[in-house]
Length: 191
Image (tube, helix red, strand yellow):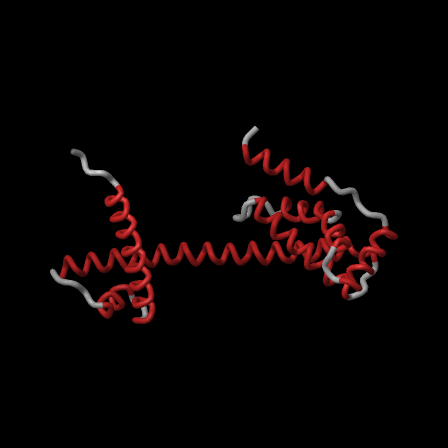
């Protein structure tokens, strides 16, 4: 059994490890949470609603975030949803629907944020490649270091964009160079 399958099975087992509560017990636990806040009653409600978190995570698997991370996010959403629902004096028979909606919305927002972050990273890589290509081509043509204004002109970018991409690319190069230097320093010289 691969590690991924084993971890998914472990998450599923954890989620299914607590049977659903009946409405009377749910009502009592919600009242306790409403009165005392987070504590044993809240923890019990969270445990008995982990399956909702797992289902929400599994339904959104393979969309850019690891299932385990999605489950953790959904569990946090369930935890917060239960506190919110108890504070609103929600009915026990509508609790599951509320939790499903909150967990689903939270995961959808998290996935959207991750997708935007990925797009931003990909856009930076494309911009860095364009910047570097333009810089090398201009340096060869002019036989000297080029200015940001010259790079902006050839790329048809605003100067601010050239400045930002140039700084980020320079920082990435410095970091890369320092990583290589550390590696070379760690390599023992032959006798």
